Length: 436
Ligand code: URA
Image (tube, rainbow, N blue to C red; front, side):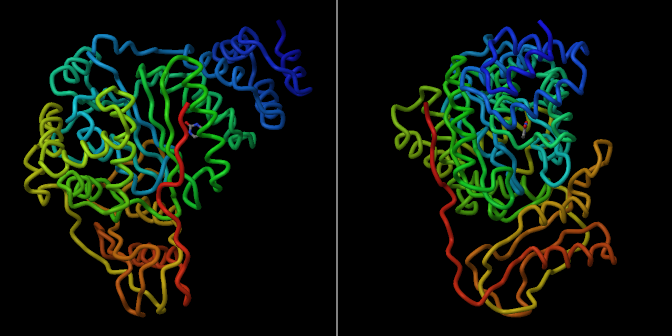
């Protein structure tokens, strides 16, 4: 087999066989297929697309390129959850304990953040003492004991995807549905779950700018999962503004605590109940979605979800005292108000700009090596649809130093709020669901 023949076949609209895709992906992984041929292949896929079975075969070749986690020592149906990324997205912190509290085992591997979106691991590490480096055996034992563990992602998970994603990033081939779908699903499949729930974001702050594109991506991922024997469901949710009110590691943990206490923001609570209910249904702990959702709502009201979060923090060495005393979380020394310079309705909030603002304050990493400040970030006071008067507070910055740099970030945040005189049309947070 020669890579050039396979590139030509795809270029001319042909369908590659699983063996041909394996040849390309494993060859690329081993350094036998060079970057320039892989770039040409990615571009051919970008223009010609892939069939569902080609996409599934590409996914499996990437999943098989490294470590494949065997979660079979964990009892029950293991259900994983993945979000295509968003500003202020702290859903894993809430959904993990929530669904574990009704008996769905959650064995989760998460990443650190880079750029404008924070990673779950960073958020958890803002809790004093919490550690995410567990041996595989300790990880599985903890899930069998308390139903939940979250650890850092193995660096050997789908290495072919890591290499291809980096190449796509510099060759204009990121925005291809089969390539994105296979990239996400290869990591989920290698991580070993039996079933997968996907949160596909759409809107200004997301990869997929339109609902149609988000649905097409969701459909591609659901059919990959189904093709390879993992029950998969996807929820399309709006990312035209940040989720909840907090952006920044410890601030997001505090908001997750409020939500687990049943006192969280409505959008965040609704998204967590919806994704969680799909996980509970796929995990076989409820017959219908509605039954699962009301079961989970009860767990927020009766304190069981919060108690599970505390048990989880303590099992991984963290200070469980933050559950009853959230002020024990890292606190920034200064608060800077961002005020509106006009009156009207908030018609949009550029989520990506707020993510960048949080990063500039120190809540995220501009480079892989950067050190995070867990305490800093922003708390929004206004969201889309709210009314404001000039001088009203739009957001509060939690900063380490009250200096010029903080004031520049305040200007960026002010600029991210779009204020208009007419009442804006708002769309619902939850837009559609794709199941097999
Ligand atoms: N996230 C991924 O993991 N891969 C992509 O291709 C795009 C987003």
